[in-house]
Length: 143
Figure 1 (cartoon, rainbow, N blue to C red):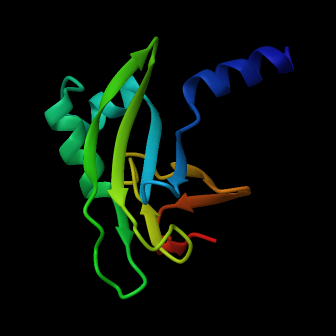
Figure 2 (tube, rainbow, N blue to C red; figure 1 turned 180 degrees about the vertical axis):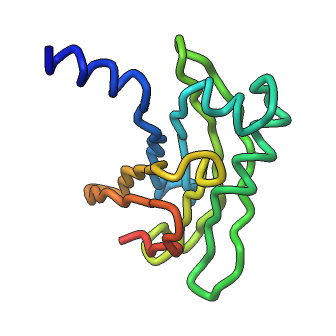
């Protein structure tokens, strides 16, 4: 009986997360961001279909990258792809001095879900790190 109640509670309250895979291409001086989000969450945030234009605008308004001098780093849209209920969104940015020390903020879906958690798995050369963002968090330096 308790298992049934737990399953009903979980179904009524889904987990709200995104996963961003961030990697740095040392040879090209480019930071690549691949964001995995659930399609229904994105549709709710966008107020309609997940199109390239809508997703690009939303993503670039909620994900920020700032260089060591405090200047915003422009994020370029590189497309989306769907896999079942999941949408993968792509951004990239020039970072000729490397990713270390850049300030990142991933504020996706905070306006929709109080329990939203945005996970970032960053890879720079052989270094791997994980950052978590919840509502109200400030930007964090990439290690």
